[in-house]
Image 1 (cartoon, helix red, strand yellow):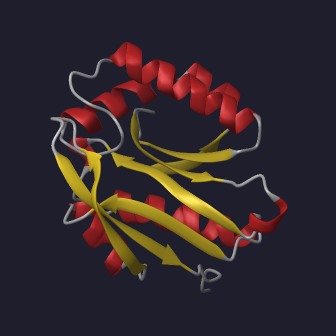
Image 2: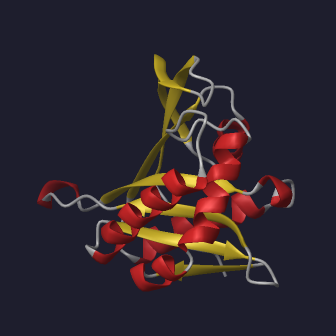
Amino acid sequence: MRVLRWDDTHMRRHIEELADLLADTVAGGASVGFLAPFGRAEAAAWWRERADAVAAGRLAVWVAVDDTDRVAGTVGLALPDKPNSRHRAELVKLMVHRSARGRGLGRRLLTTAEHAAVSAGITLLHLDTETGSPAEHLYRSAGWTRAGTIPDYARDPTGELHPTTLYFKRPAAPQG
């Protein structure tokens, strides 16, 4: 599995594959901002907007591709545009296709984003995730610090409200 940073052109070239990943993530019940039913056309439109954000320098995206160049996962860093917040970034849309889960790809994507943040001079990362989700376990085990929980913050794909837990991390330079 390779993890690559994609620019907006590369993203636009692979919109359908990215849309498949997002649609699979939502179909799997992950609370990533979308309600069911959620189709590929809606997912592709969302990724086109992300490509615009990459082009504008507001978002960095890494994509995991397998040996057949199939998209297996993504992670992004949303970069603030205000002068007083350029030291921080938000980790967004860590997604792994259901067929690729359980092999450490989520942790690899997370680590890639953390190392890239350090290289870019970012000293603080933050994120939110559904309380009690498998993603929450990943963040805790990767050294992220729980900042608090907000009740009834977001709906899962079925429309049910769930609490969200906020996390932060001061990323460290890679060892070795």
